[in-house]
Length: 135
Image (cartoon, rainbow, N blue to C red; front, side, top):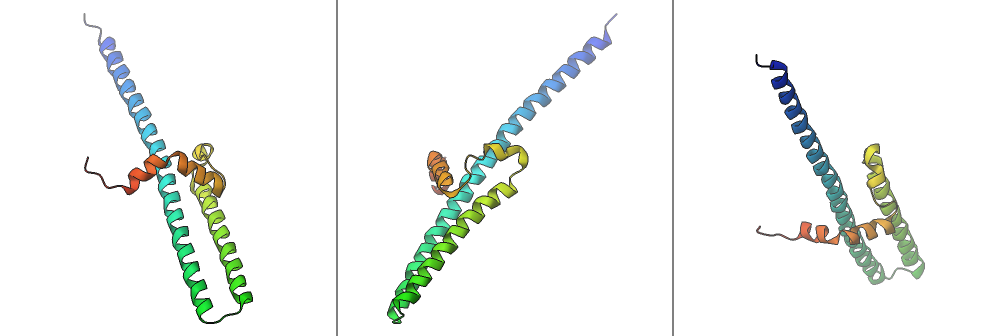
């Protein structure tokens, strides 16, 4: 007599093994997506700060051309620096706020300087994001 329960056990073992490998693979992909999204977000923020600095320099040039006093220009520079620092702080806080609590310990940075170190650590992935390749 053929033991039907043996066939059932082999099927259940195969099913559980398949689901386990699927779970491990999807977890690895999810972690990679989270890491890549952080890198892309930081890249966008650095590009935004670059444009912010260009705008600041253009505004200072226009203030000087319009014969504004040095106090007005200095006040403008101080306000722009405060705005830039606030922008950096708010963006790092946004990353923490929008990262699920399960993954917060793997973010890799907690302020702007450490975020830039993180970006430099993963610069190859950042460069590959901007590069168009025919693979």
